[in-house]
Image 1 (cartoon, helix red, strand yellow):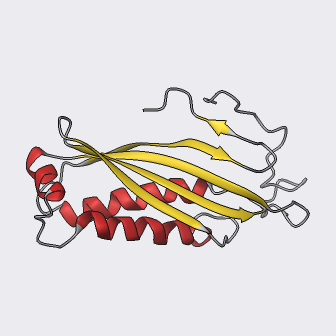
Image 2 (tube, rainbow, N blue to C red):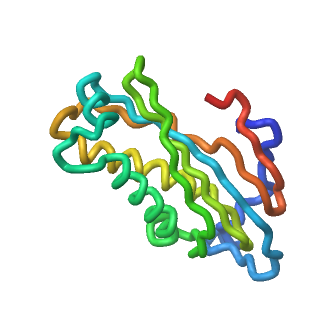
Image 3 (spheres, rainbow, N blue to C red):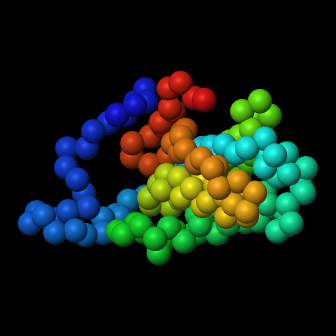
Length: 169
């Protein structure tokens, strides 16, 4: 595992003593404020990058639509990933960082909750769906776009405490 305080669990809590899959029982856990930040990147052609960043795509506001898709995805993780808990997200923020030289857009999602379980999967899913939406809206211009480097940057709250990724890029 990477990170300066990563811990390996003694057991995998998504399995019962017989090895059957189960949703983890979090009913006895206290509510705490939890925040997760994830990031990922979509690289595209110079032409496509220019059209996205100048708002000149015929399908409309690519980044605005992608931001909404990411927020919606964070709220639907329990419908997409087995054994995750449905969560009442209290904070969802998607930002973009532009690299004109590499013709890429870094997507950063920050998801928050006051609850019994973390929001790492929600942040990672938000980044993924934001990138996929950008791809979908731009594929007529550039089918060679690349989505990658999706990773957890940080998380806070809960029993395991704070995590901050080393070598944040």
